[in-house]
Length: 127
Image (cartoon, rainbow, N blue to C red; front, side):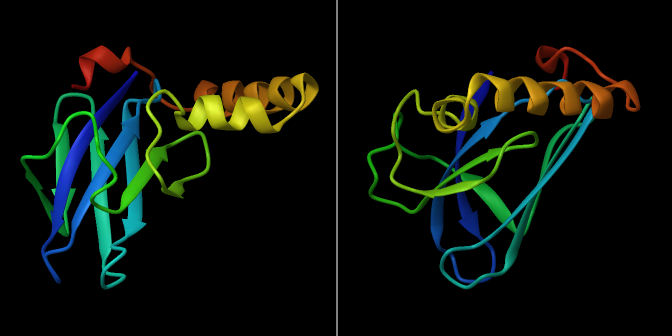
């Protein structure tokens, strides 16, 4: 599951469109640097606490994104991506399209090992 947020940096007021992919971990700390001033922007998703932002605030944005603002794709289990927004090209889809089936299976096995050591919940319970 993914959801879109439009954020405003509290340091330079840069507007950033952000697609956030959900993991199944109960705590999901995410961070990226503001594309305007490089200040850290933290997004903490936690079961029982919801979503907390530090360094930015939510603002009303366009849905779907129209590439008028800088865009970042975030997911705890996949590399971050900054660039052009493409509907449907989530971090998972991007990663799967760039690696072999064997590499994808290895990544999945490593994620399962990491997930075994932390509390997991259905992502619908975090939002």
